[in-house]
Length: 438
Image 1 (cartoon, one colour):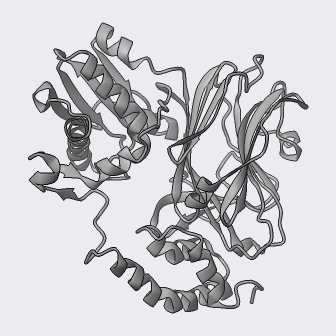
Image 2: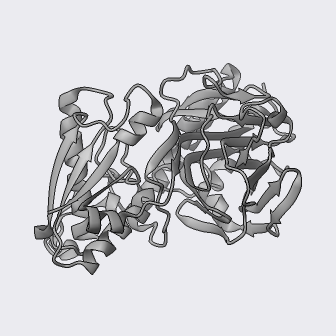
């Protein structure tokens, strides 16, 4: 059996470092979903039994008989002034200062849904065995990064000087007093080399690059932002400790990046970590993402860093201009739980722009139209698209104070695609919400 996992107390120490919310209650199941060693799974089963009573006490201490479902509605007139509210709205509002708005044209997307478990995604390159896994209670498929590895995507498109990047991140670490491996994510311009060239695996810099490095600690983490022009450092932030990092452990957090010529902004879990006016060299276009996990004394089973739901988009979404002058605009920046109408919190930036636009133009009425990709049954997709449009309307009414009489909703399901549903990029572009001025 592996050292460091021989007792259930080891995993109890992990739980101490994770906020005890509803997601943390199922953390052992999530860890089991990623662990491939049979011996380790047996130990986790023992740990699960050992902490079950403690987890029951945590649930009881909330004062509720049961945790509320994330999308469950509440109809308490004293709290909502007669309107319908839902817990998903409060989750979105947790991103109250989130001002990220994705670009309007999807250039690259990958959620690994078509990838084989236990394999590196098709077309990707890596110098170690980073593989696709499932995480039990956390939806979807995820790329588990191997220690001491660099992983490059299969992207071959230029991303331009104005781009946005989004992906979801899960970190599970069994802290034992040693320093865990640092995690880097970034982008580069490969220049004359292929964006998946082996040369980039040894040092992913290319003609220009940037990366954010996260060095996890049990009580937070150290953050360091760097960019390079070739192998010459262009920008370097002083390493700083952030206590927010400890809140990222054991759950899915959303990462967002906006590159606008030289300006570079980065958000994680709704918090803007960096806004650097001259963070990226001017010359050259980015065309590759890279993910790097360092080495450490820890066993691989004690370190879990996972990524999924990657999306790169082009340009600045000028939603106000398009809506007022063209009479409509479309966004892929309103995210929903898979197969659900529940709005994800990282949609806050787009929703706030829409709300402000309607406040500034009180005579304007709008029709919100939901669209889905072509995965699933046609009838189900039609129903889902209508429900998603209604969720956006409800958020505007309940959370932004917009008069419901100004808002209509409709759904087209998969019937009006704007891209090929046969590709991940096409499906991401088709999952959209359209706003039409009435």
